[in-house]
Image (cartoon, rainbow, N blue to C red; front, top):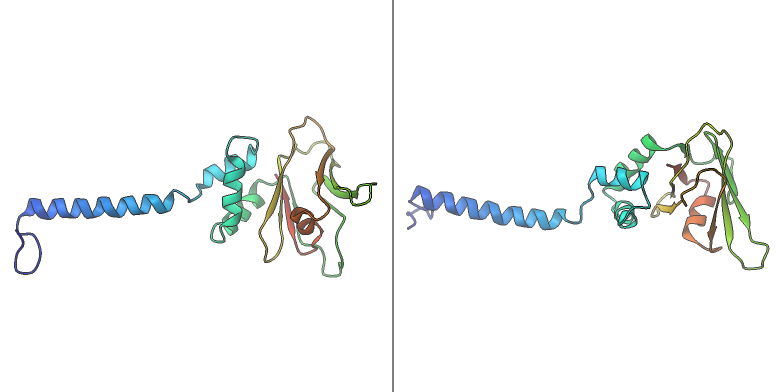
Length: 179
């Protein structure tokens, strides 16, 4: 029974109403959070990208404009090598980047209209072996490439000549992270 002010007169009824309202709010919050990215999950996927579902987590992290800055901050912390934007004097597309013991180099296919190869070379052997290469172009969706598991470098990846990853790589304003 409710009182004149619209509230339940019985303390038990008030408590049940409050609990039911809270449960409804929690169900709504849970549904919203189901698509949210857990920071530790992202760390795990960047360090072990071959795991089941890792590509979906990475896609969600880089597609979410609210989470992307946190993902880039994480990349900066765990990267084996960070390739910053090129110097202001750079013009045109970059074909090579070198930093912190690694060289990234593009090589076009000898076949006309063929793929483009990305070679990941280790300049200093004491650096670790990378798992993921992330390219973050300005005002565009970050792109990433999961690297094949290897015991040594160099690695060779093959891309279609017009792949978004290659556009991001060549853009002098893009930042790259090798984790």
